[in-house]
Image (cartoon, rainbow, N blue to C red; front, side):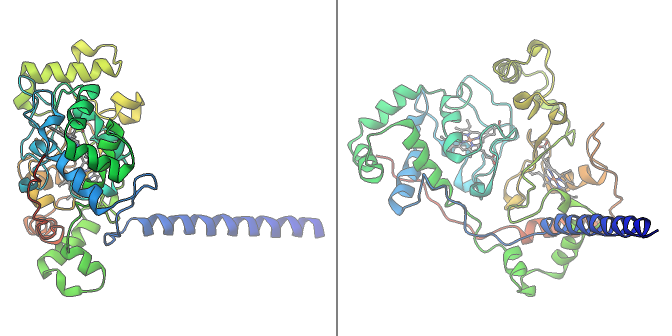
Length: 362
Ligand code: HEC
Ligand code: HEC
């Protein structure tokens, strides 16, 4: 009898523990899905920021020597006048070639855990080498660009002073990354609001925020300071029909599939996104959740620029996403709710202009 009571008591306690743990984890999941004001940007230990390094990185960012034919700098496709995008559906490209994705903004990129729509780079230092080498972006040879930078006395001295070393591609990337870490939204109304100034949002924007968190379920994926879960999802955004038959676009997509060892690359008709990198089924046509900060300034939208306006994006989500997706459901927002949501995106998430002027390149 006593034994039986002991077992029952034990089972009840076990049950209570299980319930407590699940409430706890549910609550912490809830807690992570909140908007937060921007903290200072994380800086890696092996690339501390200094004023001099930022200045050097800025010069390199605007320097067309980084491209094979000397026509293109990072700023061509990430133009400060266009919120560090190129405002094109499919990004600009190395002459005679065609890019195949939309150029994301570099605003607040310091907070990104994965870079590129498919997340193939994890640090800004690692990322910066990709466009330089890419045949359809800057098409430059790494050994060659090192010599082109090294022969400029001003650059050579700056690298010696800042890094205590001669020019090399890793240091070029470090300097550019330091500059990119300064591209941070300045005083966006949402930050004031989240820090307690309830007047920093208009009543329309506050309504939009409620929809963002509530009926619209945007917070499911766009949360935290960066307004992104830093994960990948297959919303089944349609292919951009404008490029379906464009030869140079098809060449680039085949090339990407081929270098990622996709067996049937000759017949590829879609951008498979993160699947190219991981070959995991769950990543099929999945793309990174982009930040929504500065979203008013970065149209067109999505990895292929298919939507020209935020209205089109909101309609896409309202309809339940793209054909065949398993993540989104139609949500029947009224016209008023859609308008409020848009007001929130436009008003609350835009910071003051950073006013970055092109650097004087030595
Ligand atoms: C010819 C246009 C072009 C040039 C030049 C270019 N980029 Fe990009 N950039 C893009 C495109 C397009 C993407 C998205 C590609 C993808 O996701 O596959 C991108 C992505 C990025 C990202 C990732 C952003 C994110 O949120 O994931 C960073 C960072 C970046 N570029 C920095 C640079 C730097 C630094 C340079 C110069 C060394 C540069 N880019 C040159 C077009 C360009
Ligand atoms: C299931 C996760 C998920 C939910 C829920 C979600 N998003 Fe997104 N959002 C994404 C992903 C992933 C992309 C990029 C898709 C692509 O390019 O293929 C995206 C792209 C966007 C873009 C375009 C950004 C750019 O720079 O091109 C906007 C704007 C946007 N979402 C707003 C919203 C709004 C508003 C809601 C709520 C109505 C919402 N999202 C709900 C994951 C989500």
